[in-house]
Length: 408
Image (cartoon, rainbow, N blue to C red):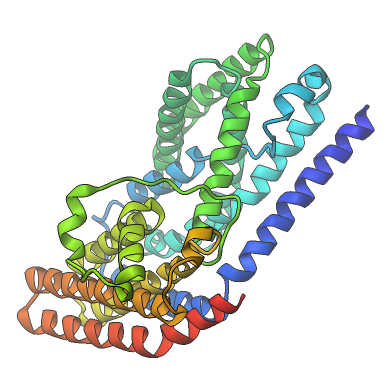
């Protein structure tokens, strides 16, 4: 029996790894990698310049405690369970301990890269303000790894609680305890505060471990969480390629109809009508556009460097356009689309027109935000650069990209 459980874990892990590799090939293509590396380089350049302006009054310990505490509190356990397991594995629950221990270990090694990246990103700010040596990075990293193990085990114990409210309360408590301990460490507070917080965390751990011993697994909850986690990954992967597993959510959003404009009632407007409604009603596309626009607008609004504003504007216009391109394949599995008496070239043309309009609207928003936060000259530069880039994207890059996607 134990051998079968070991084989089950191995097959689930191999299946998950294969699924990741399959979609990452499309997501991490040469074009996107180039843009991400370019954007990351620009971010690090301006971040290093900003760090040099900090003095001893900047609350670096508090900033690090909040960010790293949140990363620690986010500790999902990857169980790889499926809906059928609630029936077929339920009788084997008492023999599944090794399976779930491997799930916790896999979750740990899958999530520590975020802690390492976050710590490496924040450490220059910390050394600038506190004057610590680089050696403290490794000491702090060891503490973070220990806290990650603590968070994962408590998360697993709390998942045995039936009440969903207890899950939310636990998340808040772990966030506060993580943040408090890290703040005391980073601010070089009295060791009594560190010890007191550590004692509370140990007591919290022992309480839920003892409570979990008399509780059974909540299989439905575990499967629901696993399905939501994979659905989030598939939604992200769907921005780059077609994902058969994904079921998109559709909302009417009648209040946005005036923004779509009026189309002539003829055959050439068929795909234009279809893609405009698809964009507005499909949460994947509309939500993506809104999120990217808001994030870029906030970064541009709080920046006073015109070069950074231009980089952010062009980068997010590219990311938006690139991730809306898969819309060309959204309806290809529906038979009624094949019945349209419209040439295929009209399909590509309609999507390019929609993309051009959306990207130009983004450029106008970015330019307007720059005018409000900075000067008319800077806003004009961002606006003109954004409009030109939107035209180049839709006229030169997007047509060839769409043609390749249609041939797949």
